[in-house]
Structures are given as C-alpha cells and as structure tokens.
Length: 510
Image 1: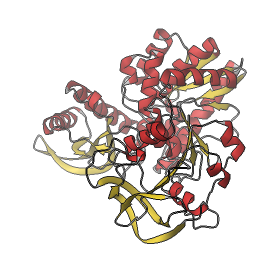
Image 2: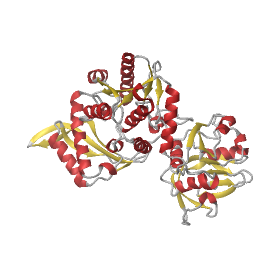
Image 3: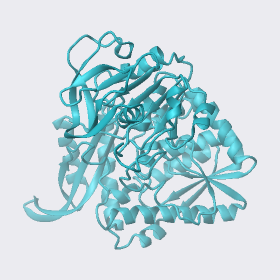
Image 4: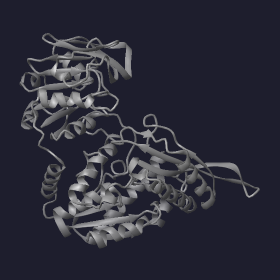
C-alpha cells in the first residue's frame, strides 16, 4: 500500500485516486498521526500531500522527522516538498514570483522518477505555490527546474526521498500519472493487486464490524451514490436494512415513481416512501440564501429519518451516499484544508442527531462509485445516471422556491434530458441539467409581449467533480432544446447556455 499524509490540499484525494487506478491500495491519514501509527500501516511508500499552509509559519503542520530515517520511499508534493527541505536542512522562502497554473520544467531524463516520459523539452506541469525551496538539503540532487523554481524536483536516491514543487495528480500536468506510477512501482516496488472488488470486500467487512447486529436506515434518493450504498448494505446485512425515500418535492419529473418501482419491487429492499413535499416547501418559504436552503433541506431530511427510525424502533445507524467531493468542499477531510461550501450530506447534520453515520463511499469519487456499482451488479442505466444533488431542484431554482417554479423547472429539465439522450450525448458528458433563474426578460410570442423567466442550460465534463469543463454541445442540439422549452414550458421565454468551467465556478449554481 501507499500511505498519504494529508496536509490539507484540495487535491489530496486525487493522489489516492491516481494510485488506486494503478491497482495499488492507497489510504489517506491526517498529517498529525505519530510515527508508531504510520509504521502500523506497513506502507511500501509515503506521500506528503500539498496544503494551504506555509512551512515558514509558526503553527504550520509538520510530520515526525524520524519518518525520514525509517528507510521507506517518501514523496513530498508542493507543501510536502517544502516540508522535506525545511526538516532536513534545506531552505524555503516566500517567493516574489509565485507560480499558479501551467508551468514548463526541464527534467532529468535518466532518473527513474521521470522514466518512460518522452524526451520532449520542456514538460508542462501544474504549479500552485507562493513559497519555494531555495536550497536543497545535503545529499539531494536537482531533478527538475522551472523559470521560478530552481528546485522544481529534488531527490536523495540513496534514501529514496523525493520532493516536487508541482502537482502530478491533476490532469493539467503532462505525464503526471506516469510520474506517480514511477514512484509507486519503480521506487516503492508496489504490486498491482488491488481492485474495486477488493474495496467492496473490505468495506463490506467494515460495515458488518461497525453495525454488528443492529439495524440501519438508509437515506435513498435514487441517485448513483445512495443507490450503490443501499445495494451494498442490503448484501452486507440483508433485511436489517430499511431504506427511506423522502420525496421533498424537489425531484425531477417522474423520479419518485421510478425509485419506488426499482428498489421495492426489483431489488426487494425494505422501502419506506415518505411524501414530505408540503413540509419541505413550508420550511423553504421565502428563503433565498443558498447555504440556508441547503441546511434547511439537510436538517429536514435528518428529522424525517429520525421520525421514521423511531417508528421502526431500535435504529442506531444512518447510511448516506456521501462522496469525497462532498466532504472536501464542506469540511477538512483529514488535514487542514479550506472549506468551500457546505454539502447536504455533511453540512446539515444537527449536533444532537441520535444515529451514527455509515458512509462507505466517503473516500471515493463518482467514477469509482460507478465501478463499485458494476462490482455489485447494479443496473447499468442507474450506474451511469448523471449526478443529482441531494437538495435537488432547490439549488437549481435560484432565489425563493415555489410550487410553480418547481413545475416549470421539472418540465424544462425533462426536455433537456430527452434531447441529450436522443442526440447520443448522455453518456458522453458528466452532467447536464436546467437551472431556473430569478430573471425576467421581455419576449415576443404570437405578436404579443411576454415578460417571463429564463432557463440556463448547464452541461459539463469531469472525472471527479473537483474540476469540470463546460461542454461545447452542437448548436443544432442546443437549438432543439431551446425551441422545445420555449414552446412547451409556460412562463419561459428565454434560454441561455452556461459556458463557465470549475474553477472559477462550481458545477451547481448554488
């Protein structure tokens, strides 16, 4: 295995994901664990992640220096490299020329760290740092340089300690995956013997150990994440699982009926269907702040779960389909990462919640969940369903929510889905949906003046939801979608297309 010590980088889980893609088991632990804990994992290699802190700060996170004399390979990335330099006698200083974004480096072609990378010069990598190493520790060689980073990559080959200023885990770094492969196999000598079936076995055993003979209630939305959790739990604990499907009135058109049919009749899972539309819409009345909407929806879900659990009696565990992107944008995952926004699965839980959480997907990305679904034998159509947020249309209706707006957005979104699928684009993109904007504009229909709402179409491609690019859908397809929405959905007289990537935007509008 490879052990990652997390210093709070937004990209930490990407490192783990890249390594797992090579069929090597990888685990993330907080940078605060002691040497004995590190040794207990018996890793073949250790990676020190990046992070938002500066090694020049008095309270900056660190690691036990003894780890460097343990004799196993270590790779420091960005902050991790600076930490290596700082702890082992090198020098780090704040730079007047910070590097953010794509940067070109010259690299040492004969190093096993850069093996199997074409001899092209230079190599484009992704930098994101203010501080930089200005003097390498004794015994270290320079493996790569950039215009502003004379120590873009350093190594002590004898001690197998490597440090790089750039991020190989992000897609913007050319041959970044190859660099991580080189560390994993050439330096650490790992074996490619781990896959999603192994993850399923491990997590199934963890679920059984955590739950024991107790009963579990699962929050089921019908999306990929919660559906995979439900099927996994059902196979692990059988009829001790009860799924609660709450119709919050903010679902897509026909969604409630589809979920009931699939899980109660097809998968034969104990299912409680609660139509709480009136309750949710009452709580959301006159609320326009997106964070408040998320928290209200999250809290209401939990209250309903607890009510249903009380009816079932002796329910001590609540299962959720929380994924890593949900966590990393909402709270510090393992290390001191920056909070971006609260998420429905992690940001709206009351402190006095009576149930303990079961979150077996908490360290996975969406594409990994789909692979897990295949290993579980989950229906192919469900596995490839586009992501749908827990707060549902509540965060796709900007501003205040009303029944009329929900109905309008449901119809517009349904048309988007129909046309995307008919054109063969559904499986080509990560996510596509409609957003109802609180903007009215003047239009002309049948020689009459209109003053109605605007629908924005959002279509993005991503591999992990951490970053995303807008998709240049064919004009003909966009034209059909626009024409149908304006002609078939009342109260809409204008359709626009969102061409914002993430960053700087987020995938959802709220």
